[in-house]
Image: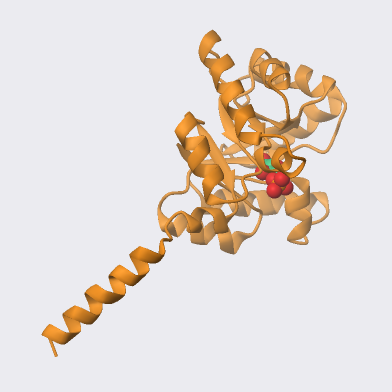
Length: 218
Ligand code: E4P
């Protein structure tokens, strides 16, 4: 399973990268705004700064919602760095743009996926990644993990190469459940990634080992 970090915060990206398990980064306009990154030039140079920090794919989202605009923005975004994956919303012109980009060999991440039907359309249009939002579905009392399972089943049945990128991950159990199902990628905050390494018995066990070592070596 690939681990992407879902942030535009350079410090968090550095920390996740230093852990040695980071495979890429996803961003969205809200995450960029959270970091105070505004204006086209600043946004473009921030994407470049992110690309310079990581070895894997970096999803950069278009703002346009019409076909020509999505294509124009996507073509500008891929000029920033080879790591850029164009993030396209699941709307009618977005599907057309996914098809256009896949024909040109431009990698895409179809975002805002909330149903298996949307994921099926994105795969047919040749999306590289599809991003079902697990946490946002859970927030409205709908089973986000069940959607991951449904999409994986459909993709396996037809042999679609589109990778399932479980997004809107909120906590470590989301990561584990997605991993059990075989999701190709998960993208989550640093807190969810770091929470995977925590267990109280690990902490108390280590404390005891160190105390016993000290007793025998003092
Ligand atoms: C990433 O690609 C998505 O934009 C992101 O995971 C959404 O997460 P949120 O629901 O926590 O905002």
